[in-house]
Length: 255
Image (spheres, helix red, strand yellow):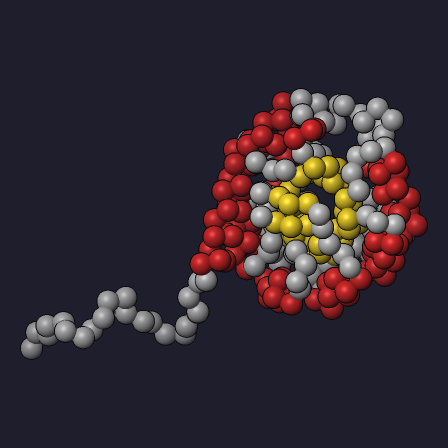
């Protein structure tokens, strides 16, 4: 079980609902992923009608909705966006995303802190999108964020985990869930993130942009499960020299 605030999740894979070429591919990918959490940009939908085109073919009663504040550049914008989503009855869980750099789409740490604090005071379940800065991650946890979501690399880049060391330290230092978000490009990246110690992953571009989104969704689902199992199993330590797999004691030696 992955516990995020009051939400208990069987799947540790969260999936975005943007960038798919058509609704059929989106529906097939969501089903294949086994996800329980669908994330979407509040600014992309009509809150009065729930904009069924965005979620066409999906039974939304089967999923927890995770609106995000993508497009916000200030804490005030992020808070206002989250409040609109909650007022529409979508969910009280929100991914706080306040972009500070238009080139890299990396988050603004100060505005992210401000928005997260304000939304926590308003009773939201807050998942904060951040960089792989360990100090910032610890400060977000100290605020009371229900999960911290460090980027593996820039959004949509598919570059994978650029700094495994930072990510590993974050997973070791934080008690709240660490969900790797942004930049994961495929199953190998997902497996590595989970094996390092992440509690979950969130993907969009890696699945939606694949040649076969449904097959990629299944691949990352299995990678997520395998990586988690590998982490829980406890891998052997890395060594600078060889170590024979078979014991030498008792073996006959030819002269």
